[in-house]
Image (cartoon, rainbow, N blue to C red; front, side, top):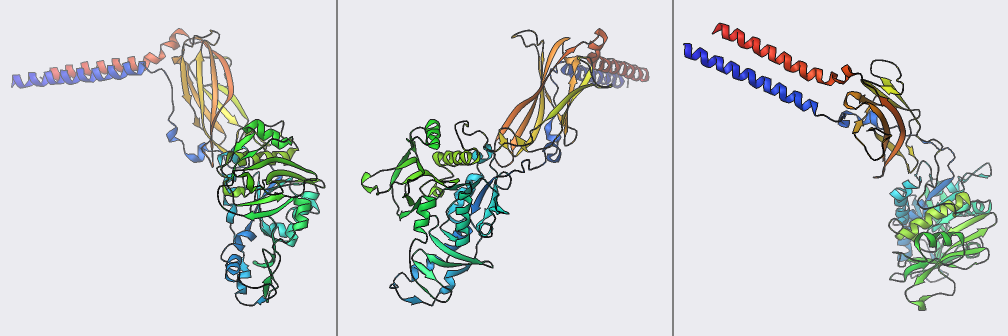
Length: 522
């Protein structure tokens, strides 16, 4: 019996000393902590993400969705063309006329890559965002006068993709837009080839592409609907349709401002992935600057008029044309991407010499602004001297998605970096990364524990991290640098030891008392 009690006593002592050892281990580990951090995984997206706002109300750029041309290609006009290509000139067709009168489809058609470009990292870095800094309209809007309000232009720049079929009113509105001082950027050849009529959701062929239709019968007719007009104010007309490897680069070797910009940015002979599809011939070189000549792989294929990217002035405005079917390769071709961006820049400001690609083309009216204050943990606003516990509040006086280098960003995190002895060059004694927590939608808080900092001068650098909403763009900007002095009293400096030391003493007292009680019982 006595032996059993002694064994139990030894077990109690072993358990007690094991508990004391664990307490000491935890206490010593806590003394080795050299930085303060807060886990951002506990922060919800609702709190950490800034709200979506449109900051610029002066939107002067529009891109036109070519739904009329998309409709013509959607098992409609071209089915008829193929089916009745045998018809002699002067005869009429009264069958399958429904193919010339189709419900309008809401689609980009061949211009899908133009839409893709406006959703790319390149466009977002330029602050060109569909629905925000760039207005998306369609051809019905243009047909109904949507480029103007009370006779005044609503836009400075209008961008077209593959716009082969247009109504007469739409065509005249484009012409009026340029004449009144606008910049019309045409990215694709074969523009304004044929006339259509739009009414109550239906699109009908009127005249062009070799046919004419009056609602009751169709017959062979002209291929180009407005060739002289196009030559006059657009500067060019469709040349031919072909496939194969016809071009290998574009030579930007003229004195035009855009040519000079492209040459400085990309070089004189710029490789392009465009090989050939449909091209326009530059037939009017009056008031026209050639930006670059598309280089033929086989010089014998060169036509009488040049295939070129160009700038044509018509009255008070400008037409800028790629000369080719840029929508074939726009989303991946560096030259065409820079060409489009530079053309937009020219249309907005009238120059490109003061701009470097890819600086933002559209400036935001609202920038991220913040105020930073340091407070004592259990007091009011702190002075330049800190001791004990403190916190730093970063308040954003607006909640926005705009950052200087990337339009439409979310605020992902706020961090602080403390460096000791800021007056000592090249002798950084201490670095602490403080991860902030979001207090609400406009305030982030960083906790500062000066117990871990040696008395002396310090610098607190506060950074904000932004992440693009529609792309992988990440930006980190320093929003504030604060200088302060840590001055802890000697008794405050030992406070970090109080908790682990107190834990050890309490554990020792409990163990001794426990062992004495059990020893008395035994």
